[in-house]
Structures are given as C-alpha cells and as structure tokens.
Length: 69
Image 1: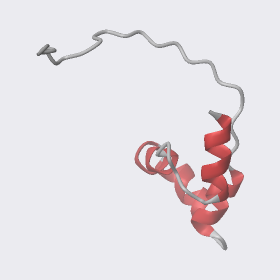
Image 2: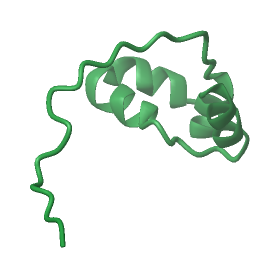
Image 3: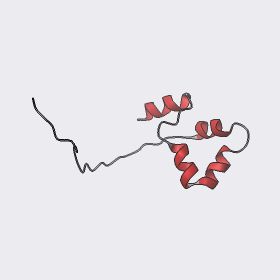
C-alpha cells in the first residue's frame, strides 16, 4: 500500500481522495494547507503515510446471481 501512495505522491495524484475529504469535512484546515505559494502541490508534498492496519468485515460476497452455462 505504501508503494502505491509514494508513486502517486511523486506524480502529485490523489488516488485516495484525501484532498476531497479535507475540503469537505475539514475546510478550514484545507484552506490553511493550500494557501500560499505552492498551494495544492504543497499539500501533496506534506502528506505522509504511516503503518496502517485495516480490518474488513465482508457483509455480502456478491449481489449478483451467478448463472452457469
């Protein structure tokens, strides 16, 4: 996961929608982070990803009925 993050960060691509979340839910912080020289470029260069643990609870494996021929 960190490989994808670093590759996207190098290309300044927000593949996880981080900026959208900041803009919609934490607008004041987003304005501070994108203000001044560099703007959004500064936002991407300042992002860091630490070790993450993800727990997934699968509710439905599929909503489609399989048809066998």
